[in-house]
Amino acid sequence: MIKYIIFTLILAIFTALWEIQCEGDAGWAKKFPTFRINIFFKKLLGGKPLTGYHIFLLCLFITVFHGLFINELGSWKMEARIFGLVSWFFVLEDVLWFVFNPHYSFKRFLKQNIEWHLRWFFGLPYSYWWGMIIGSFLLWIGMK
Image (cartoon, rainbow, N blue to C red; front, side, top):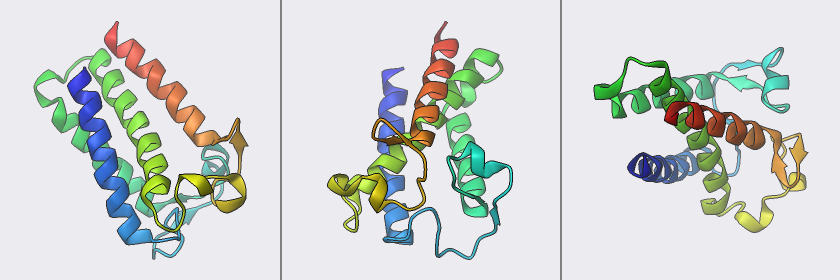
């Protein structure tokens, strides 16, 4: 499992760096020509709209992680493990976007500096907490 965690971290680093090149200082695809769904999903995403960019990014990485486990697919435990890694991937990638982004840095990782993360709890956006909790639970189920 350690090699999959290392793979997830490396993939998160490169994805964060790539996204910084695309978004610059305008996170959450603010300046992208993408559709936004503001109704139901805003509550699930801690106040952020669901964007077409993020839908297709999610689909891409679900596919990538299934490809990583292509020889082991076929059980609910493996699906739990995959979705647990995907969940953690998105939390890690988003944190690293701030760490590596010259417009932010980790010092500026504060609610008042980040307009698209509207709801925070103990110094982190709600979506991070949910991602870590759900991801950890799914990994735990997948390892049993």
